[in-house]
Amino acid sequence: MKKNLLIKLRQMLLKFEDINTEEGVVLSVEGDLEVGKEVFTTDDNGDVVPAPDGEYNYENKVITVAEGVITVIADKEAPLETPAEEPAEEPVVEENEEEAPAAEETPAEDEKDAKIAELQARIAELEAENAELKAKLEEPADKPAEEEFKSQEADEPTAQEKAANIVKFLRNRK
Image 1 (cartoon, one colour):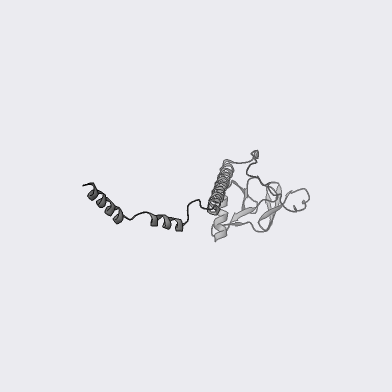
Image 2: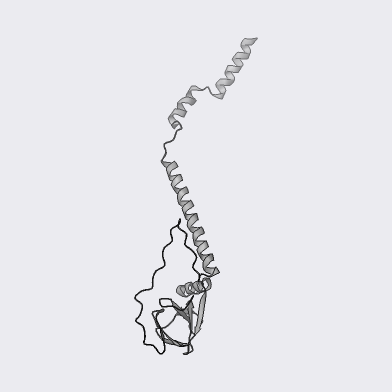
């Protein structure tokens, strides 16, 4: 159930292309039809699930799916290509690096990338603030110790002593 919700959320956030196969199955692929892309379909309950393994005919192509991923796309007349070993991973962009936007990026992908960048910046701010607070906690206090306060208080007269001194002063003035 949780996996279905994640797949539905992903489908809403990303641009999916629906492919109506000759077998009557509707396959959903993020972006363009390419080897290594995840492919989904809708089951009888209306849940979005990874597409079943098999070969699907679409226009003049045969699409082979294994474990919910497109492994081969071949022309119907041409011999099948060998499956791709592994899809290439997207390069990781460092915080300070800027990557030129790809031509196939959609506005939804741009918004997602902007949100990720915003969150990364916020994390960096919070980490800096955390480090600053830790440094303040480790600094020795410049204030006198509690014992020094007590000794200073003992040297000062109490309110009653001050009042008695004022009364004595006023009596002596007469």
